[in-house]
Length: 292
Image (cartoon, rainbow, N blue to C red):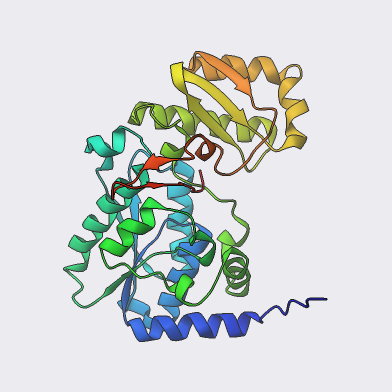
């Protein structure tokens, strides 16, 4: 029988801190999610005022996530800047093919490099963890091209270890559900626009308040169809009276032409199964996976 020994939080913390100590003062690409929050906390512990967290702000960032990032940065005790990125101006991003995340991260890291000019010698770090390794992830390709380091991966930390550290350090994001960007809700091949991401954000806020559900997705499909993914235990309530009528009415008010409930329920990466093969940036075919 295989016995899995769980490392203590103190051991995990010291391993991450040692790697980041060697990297020196840093700028953290910080979304406010648990992964980048743990990296930001380690940076603050090590470097104090010489550490900086930078959050990309664009129509793909949910308003609630932006506010959470601000509050968590204060709790962490790290200097925090917001960088207004312009990925929506890039046709490569708007066309929403399988490499959309590359163009998003490429825009982000180019912007952060301008910020770093005011902080010479500082390494740029992201919050990618060990669970992100394996499948083709265009955003990680952008990180490699821009020389961005991933200390969680270098420390051998997957999502469970990251959450363990978040609890150890008392971060509010420790139990925060994954919250990928709003553009990831738009079906591949449907143009990404700020109007569509705003519509999705407002629809998800409405559904969370109506159903009391923390983790859900409103997927925007072809022809402005809304496909709602909920945990299975919420499906009956959403399909019953009067919630069904309220949901349909509100989402139509927001501009969706049709509203559907996905009977398979909520699942991260619910659009990626439509891209078993695609042409990557390098011109070869590869599977694409990513949380959305």
